[in-house]
Length: 135
Length: 278
Picture 1 (spheres, chains in turn orange, brown):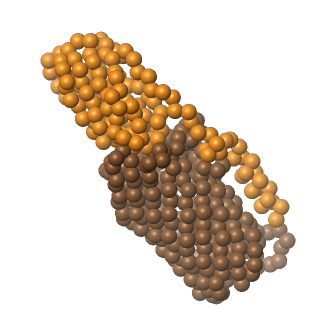
Picture 2 (tube, helix red, strand yellow; picture 1 turned 60 degrees about the vertical axis):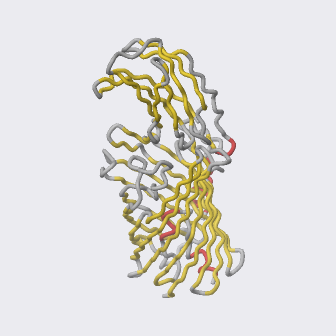
Picture 3 (cartoon, helix red, strand yellow; picture 1 turned 90 degrees about the vertical axis):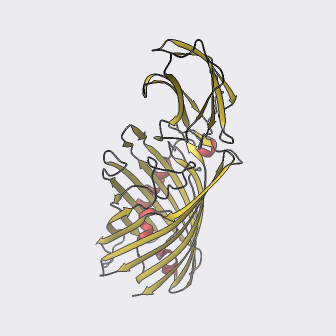
């Protein structure tokens, strides 16, 4: 039965690589500073009110350099590019002419996420911004 | 009696080999309960992202499997299961239950052990069709995704199982045809090796090492990138008598690397097998 032992040893050896239990990812701090919508040329700053977390709903707000043009709105969503799915809709609240708050971000599992912001006009996306991070 | 315990394997681990009658049984019924706890995910670099201690993802699977030997060389199997999922995170609790995958398969013993040989193993060629009853990664409608029960896709497995004495080895290419929620066909692959050690005439313990690869899946603009994982299983079994076996199984996907883009989980299963002797 030596060939079975050879096959089993080959299987064990080919599992080279750190086992997950000893190979935990370092979760990088999420730093987001001054950002830009490239097409509409609007700069903005993004501030996390509740940082992205697996334990509670997150929220953030952006402050635009100038007001959006009439008829334009901003929306946001989060997405897992490796998993092919996102999460529940994000609530948007206009705090002032240039400050918008986004709440109820539900990061439902660990992994790579991207945060998306979109400027919409006439039901079309005319500009967008995104940043990846890992939870 | 020694043959009875490891002739009826069940409850996960070894995958294709678990759906095979290897002993002198005309038919087998196996009822089992499995508890699985999902601990996190591995990313594409093979690093583990473990979930918070206050979060939980639990799955309870109640399975029934029937296997029947129709001729000396031909056998078939049918499995159904009912799945309950519970998830707690982000201050929310969500649960969902329903049928999981239905599996229908057959094996043909291409090489037998009818004539004595010091080396020749028994070789089984199989086919198995998986019919999903739960949702999949692309069409889940629940916020915490508890409606994903099983593979979520139609699948065809082509297992080849090689068995000799205490050893079993299986290779299973898997084909997923294009279907609703899957833009183009894709494939998966699994291989496993099992060694069974007889502690007494009635009690044995099996160790299984399994490697699985899942190719990329796409649906419209969404994609689930390729993933792979290793699973280690330990399964003691007790032959209560010639026709009744009790099986326990522990499986763990965190102990052996490299895992990429796959769930990190541990599971425990308990099952009972009733057999009719030839």
